[in-house]
Length: 579
Image (cartoon, rainbow, N blue to C red; front, top):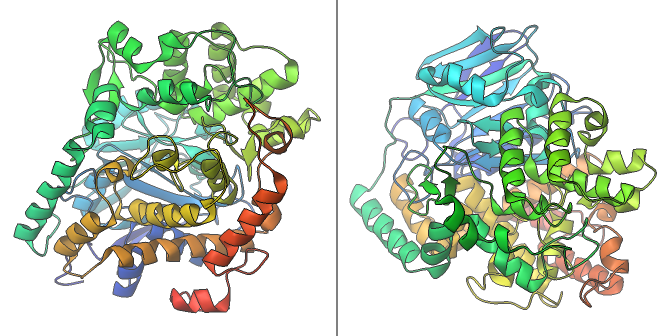
């Protein structure tokens, strides 16, 4: 597309079965209405049609940048991945930070679509116009750190470890050794295609329509980030572990597979201030990010995020931070989602009536990564594992995706967003952590479902747009839709308002919903495990009738029918057509 700003106007398509490589020009309207990232990925995955088996060659992987990627827009260094999840059967998107997305954009592509299955292990190498499939025989069987070490001289690396090769359903894709496309089993999809890695190097530029206005808006966003205490005094100082003290104080931290509110041991050694004192961690930042929430110790070991600490501690009965550090590194090396691993270990401990010791934690992570012994069962995810043990009620999941480290009885809006999430139990689809726990952009009562249908819809639409721009959610603690609509307008030359961004998010949410309906999901799947309705923690429980009433209200606000199916009216309003 000549004269296009922000977008490159080129999508790369690779068929591993035929070794066919080609590019095509997407319609301008597609980019304008779906932006990029998650939105573009959702549309491409939806248009690929019904796929019975997510591990079949017919499934596609879509790596997608956004219109801000490769500019210096604050916190714009992320890359999105979309596919059908082999773990849940839902549409799946996940995104990771680092620098891979910037390299892909500078190589000249808005997205890469990968389909088919190679007859032998390969990796894809992209350097601007040069795109090649190369033998991965020398790196197949290696974990992600060794694979990255061997390939990093060629460019930025996203690869699977042994877990992905063995098609473990908790397998992730790891970029540059530490950044994860974590949830939903995307690593297993990559392994099913005999695809070991994607290596990208780009040397081009991203055109910005109005450079002076872009710089003005960039400075305005950075000022807001600096002025926001949650960022400047929380995330920038402590990283995401600063949440540990807050959630434990609220008694929102999962304990013993979400069965209690108080752990059997003190959590002080897991608090961010103590971690900083003992480990004196160094900051690591993604591309164009002043927040710098990643941490590593003086030995160069990546330190775990809040979700990993929260779920690998009280949720499984382990008090050793050092064991969590080692388990986190093992998960990254094998290429496994830490949230899902901790969730299934919590379920295992609940069923067996035991705590998971620090030694057992490491042994079980290895077993999952190798798909051996009990690890072969656990690696199928909490829903399948609990059913195989005859205890499906012990599985803490939504639509097959293990829950993150916030108890939905204590943060009820967040719990409602788990239930209605298109990819299953996930805190980032609406990120109501912000208003219910961190009181940003304003505080809302976490202990009630009143008003949460509206809040959930607004935050779901907001972060669908954020994931399509594609920028980091943490930036939205300080900036908002208006600021990012302004900088998007400066980059692309297309006039976007905050309302336009919200409409894009609503469009994306609806097409994802249509995908899941096509795959057989119904209103019955928009729920939470029975434990949260039947068992109180610290006096809090979710009332079934109130939950169903809130679900009815949410469907009405979305313009869906009583079964959660988008109506003709809303689809036509969003320019999604009507079938």
